Length: 445
Image 1 (cartoon, one colour):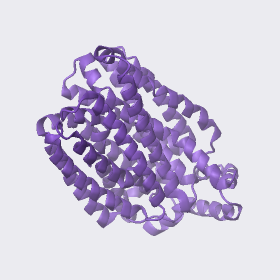
Image 2: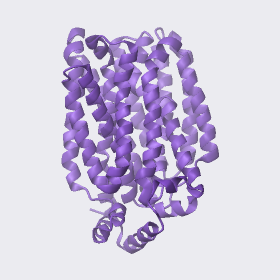
Image 3: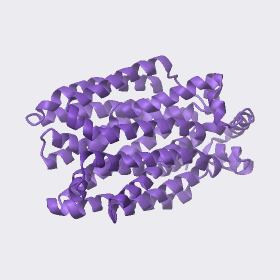
Image 4: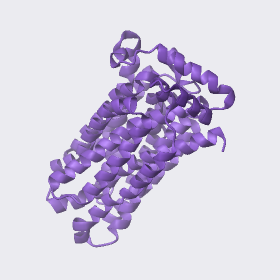
């Protein structure tokens, strides 16, 4: 197997954690109506059950920086897979609503750790000319996980009547996540550790061995020397990120993370069936539409994958934020008449998720994994990703209430957010395509 082929294989294994990330994010969408009926929940409590996983994400992200910087990227990914397995089992067989919330929190911690460990690991093993494409594999995996969850949910709904769904069906939806989780734990045994983390941990001999496995022979020594020189110049402290020469990039990453959350994507991911049901679309069609949404996200994530190292990160982010805003405006206009024209509501929703997938979905993770110095990359990403999951928590917590009160006006709120996001990207986000991680640091800092 060629060096590039081997890197693709181990990146793909790491990205199975992205499948779990996506599955855990999307599976809840099929259970909301059944959970509300089974546990007799009001909208606020349902919002808490959905969004409490995002509290777990914040906890996971806060701890992930220490885990992946201290124990390694590989062990961080293994830990996330273990948490996904525990969460799937706990959500499927909760003794009460409090137990279900705890299981959702555990799964959220797994998502938080995975959202840190996977893009950093892939960025650190990938050659500069295909790094954007390889890091974006994780986003493809996230979307595949979502499609898998939507498809499993749609299939399970057809296995019984409404009473069966309210008592047993939602349990099967949660339990299906255990299959990819166990597979992930098994396959992680076969991947190498990040050479940059090994060098940072003073395990220099192993770092060289890994570089020989993943780097063309003529570039091994130059890459190794660049890593060592880079490590010597860094202090490895979080405080370094807020010193004058680095503060601008740190704040930019934090705000970009917040925009990835508050431009509305998780409204679609968590509540797609509920949105369609609120618009008067039949139950089967509502869940079927969710599958179509997931497939469209997969297609356009693959489009992003093919463009990111040719067109660049910045232009994809700009196109995405503009297109998302326009789609949300049209979605809000179509919502009141969706019962007569559900196809139009679906079309505008597909337009929105397509633009998101081209830019804000995968490109965000690429940019944030590239722009920070090596020895503090884990801690720096912790800060930005906490903003991401914090924004997601607020959106997921309050959207059921916002939809009930504002109806179609809620989509205009998110459209305004997309417009502000466009201006922010245009004014602040740098281009990083085709540069090594060390070159990016020298350019930015």
